[in-house]
Length: 284
Image 1 (tube, helix red, strand yellow):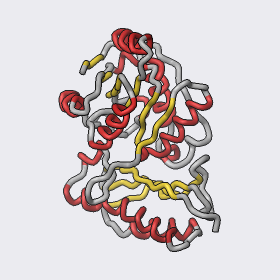
Image 2: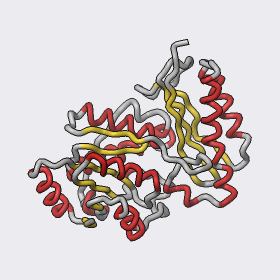
Image 3: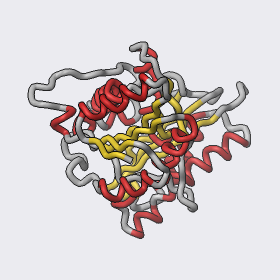
Image 4: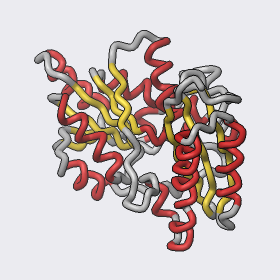
């Protein structure tokens, strides 16, 4: 496995692989890897001759007062974990390499970036689509792998790929959870033991929502209200949003006909956590 920080060296390697007719897979991450990330890498390993993992804490997707400076970073630890998959390349560029002095070009997907996380994190998705576009241009992957935990991000990236006629496939991998149901996240490291226990209310509320739908409930408002009541019953939880939206356009719906996305963002103490559940329901 090679750790590459230089853009020229990366282009040289992927150019050779493409010239040989081999398949390149990309797993974009911000590092501090966990089993969710490693699952993406294993999926890429199954299909691709060259697996590239990017590790880059992207300043463009952090807003004022967010945790850019505090975001956990440990390249040595990440390299050991990724090497065990194994992956072929870790691409870990410095910020100045991707955003040199005078940088002034951005990629923005409109509409679907304005709901859910887009409401509370203005500019976040412009940062995401800009850096992912740059990674696609640098790595030239045939396939890129993303986790379902960041469901809105996946929808936005797929839209960008389609709208800009990019010649690659986006593969979405299901959420990887801890044994007790908590969705794996690099930010889980912020949680105290008490907060870690409180965070289970996210997955429990989604499970309850699924059970209501399985029993025939199709009123989105009632499902949402049940979830909100559960989360508000946890003293350490503060809701950013709980929404039930159409999976295609991420717009709120009144009646569940499917497929739909049940998505939430909740602060446990100071830590903002995401979770979601996709539901395919009958037209009843």
